[in-house]
Every structure is written in C-alpha cells, then in structure tokens.
Image 1 (cartoon, rainbow, N blue to C red):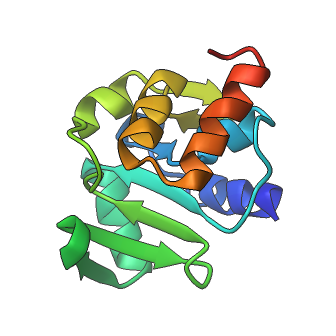
Image 2 (cartoon, one colour; image 1 turned 45 degrees about the horizontal axis):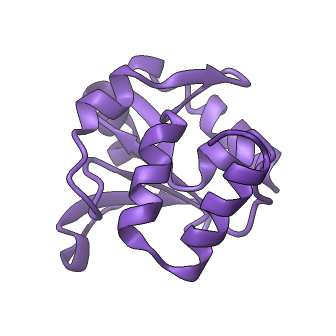
Length: 134
C-alpha cells in the first residue's frame, strides 16, 4: 500500500521544492517503521494550488490547519503542521529526496514525535534509535 501511495504522490507531478512528506513517512521510507494507514504531506505555493484543484480543501479547527485529502484519506496535504512550532518553509527547503520524493529530515520528525508524545510516537522514536538513526 505504501508504494501505491508514494506512486500516487509521484503521479501528481508536484514541484519537489513545494512539498515534503512528514509525519511517519520519513520513517516508513527508511523501513524504520511499517506503513500503517496514511501519509501526511506539507506543501506550499504551486503544490498547494495543484492539490486544491484535485481535492476539496477542508479546515481542521483542532490543528488550525487547511488540508486536502486524497485516496479516501490515505494521503493528506496541509499548509501547516498543527503540532509543535515548525516552520513549513524550513521543513520543505531542507527536505531529502528519497525514492524520488522529498521527505522532511528525520531530526524534525523525531522532534515532532517527542512533542506529540503518544505511545505510537514514542515507539517510533525507539525504532529509529534501534535502527541506528539516533
């Protein structure tokens, strides 16, 4: 399923300097954690304009974030990251290209997961440690 979702994102032909896969995606692509249910993607400028034409924009009040979901909610694009104080431009500008897609650097993913602190997030941090990424 993950490869299908990465393929879907590639098929959108979004400008790689206007989006980056965040959340668990950078851990998934490195095989640190298995794919569970979705991909979260931050975007700006032309990437955001494109996804808004394809999907229906929604506002998530709990996270103060505008999003567009695709593939029955399996891929979610947003213009901000609702947990922590992350600068979207920094996250996108410093993204690493893996398998032809931009991914937020692991340092920011780990920081986000520490802030969120749910059991899933803590297990992801431990998996990254065991895999030698921390």
